Length: 243
Image (cartoon, rainbow, N blue to C red; front, side, top):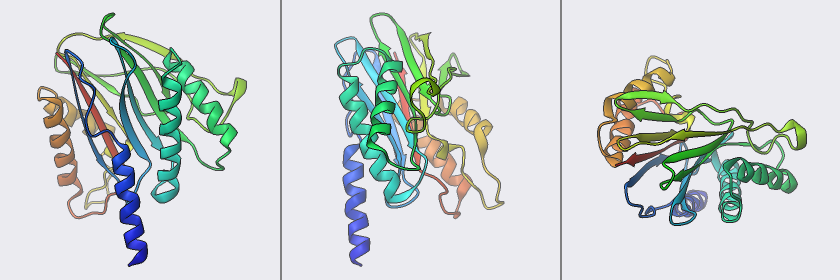
């Protein structure tokens, strides 16, 4: 009972770290959904106002579950928040966070991260993808994957660490769909994993809805696929609407 109470307290602390409200920005709408596979998990997301024109989008997935992943998640999120305030480019932010994670020296832990900066004045998204699943850009009903190459954070430093930075134009009516692999690793009663193609289908089906409705619909559909099978992995979703 004491362990259950401590785990529930840990869950409450972790959930409190995730944003309950998002920055107000003309023409942008944010919504998110989160479900750990255990009491606590290693996925997280954030929306960070950098200045009047630029807003950072973050989604990440620690390669583990439970309490170790939750602690590493808290550490990584804190580092991203600290570095993002004074580092200009997404690639530079992730390089600095990678260096700091290696200096802190958590053995056998690493994290995949997507970090992008929406610039409303320039009408573009500049981003770096450190080993994370390719987010989706939904435009005129078509689901496109954002490219870019990069390695997970916390594994390698120096010249071994490779990361590209990409820029894509953002238009009115676009939707950005950032997610962790728990949304593609849903296992149904037949033992089959839903996979990325199923997620693309669901995103295309619901992309016309407001971001909050998209989050609810996607999680409801995945729960229907899983039925009474235990959740396999942490799940996090961040949807951005451009109006």
